[in-house]
Image 1: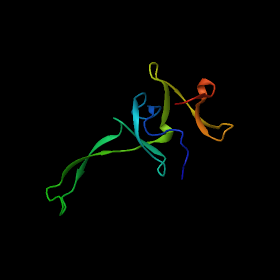
Image 2: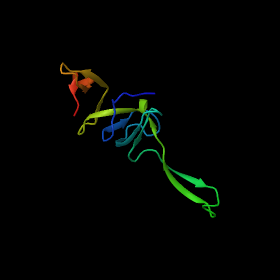
Image 3: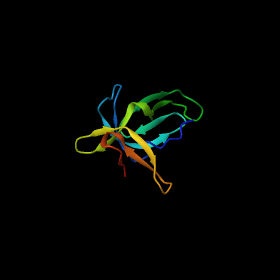
Image 4: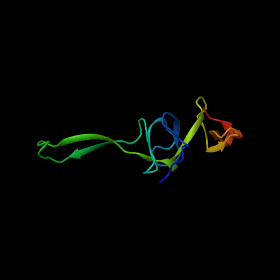
Length: 109
């Protein structure tokens, strides 16, 4: 089980591979057990539902499919949409902070 907090809820990420490559969106949730994230506007699909006792007519249902976490990169600069890998550094006082590797370990807010 992955417990790293490199990408958290509310971050802006960019898809770096796959069918949605190049699109950016806000992280709605991080699914640590599945190593995936739910990104706003990406992964929305339409499913058919078989008739059942609760839903005798069947129909359609919209679901949100998670994106694997290795396919996203954290956006550091909103204007240029420049991305960076994320590291975690422990400070002298014992607190852990996220840092952007491509910006020479600059702290991420």
